[in-house]
Image (cartoon, rainbow, N blue to C red; front, side, top):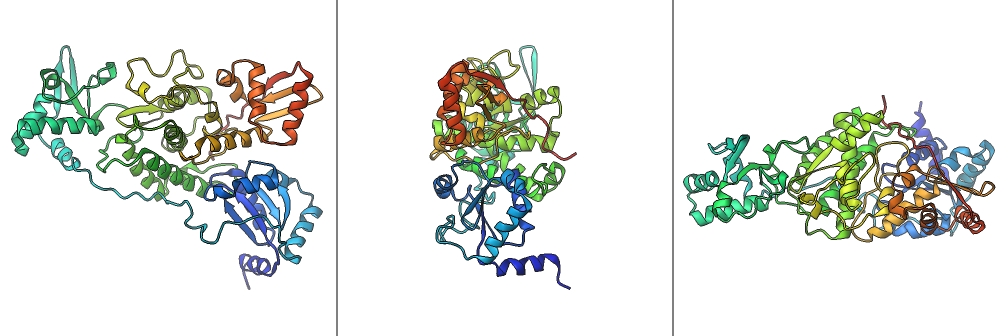
Length: 500
């Protein structure tokens, strides 16, 4: 007796048309739609918009929407997952019959070009080829030498440290270097962030390593010995430093794969326990170590946006796997102020990334001061101004957050505008009540009101400018034209998307 999967394939192969599903990785609504469509015994062509952004404009023109999934039965646009789930049984059966009995029309929704295979287009699969850095072996020898130990500086004792003099002496004695070569090697170790100044937290950067008296008296630590709680610390990143943008894409794509593989069939929850046991997660952890020494100061605005958005989203998942997803107010506060990565020689928490870097060093929720002081080296990385569009790209791990995506420096502003449009299309982002002359917005707009102009009037103007052409935008324009629009804020769904 044939199994049900074989029978479904046989029925689907007899169909004349197809269902076209536009989706992205890590999208819970897409997973739920695929599960529903999979039970209908019709051929489904799933087009990953993350791999085929060239189709985004055409799909938006056909549907009038920026959100995914978007579903077509032959050339009949059904809408998103909610629309699919709300179809009356008789209407759904009519659409299934349409696909099975009528050939695909000429105006069927577009598919990727044949030379852009679904299997390879935009795909990296977390691949990273480690080219051993020329100083990595030297650092390994230093770790096993007699240089690193407890050093006294004034009244303080600094464990696992060494002075500039001790390092230079060791390089001369054990490696046969002339003093000038030993000093330049010390400078290279500092520049490549294999080691850091013990005093850098108080505003000192360790300066240069030119052999002067100040340099020789300075205490240093290997970066892996610097005390902090970063999730990617404790090992030396011994590979040649990769480009920050490329590394963030690799990490983000790997987390998206993990996230997708461990989404429940209904797309509503994530099996974090199963994800942490996946061999791909171990590969992710090894890859995250390479963040330790990436170069940040040379990044452009666009590169910083893409890099830190991707890293933030990956870090939320990494933190949830290692520490568990936060379930109450205190746990959330701890999570976003504690979960961190060591990036470019400095520790960045989730709060540091969002409010310090991406919001131009502004105070965040329940924060009494700016994340970075004037002497903090991380301030050099911060963007000059708040970037309001980032709020629709960051995924906080709760069900009410924007969908997960991967961002690239190229055309980043367009990508972020698309994310904002998609967010505002959803009723958990914006609801327009024409009868009550009321606009109900996500709590995100209340929390970060300063980023959107600071007043209700400026807030509504910003929302209108960033809406796609839609009936909702027309309704909002009508409400605003009448004046005295009431602004209220929707409750935010903080419940975890992890399975118990």
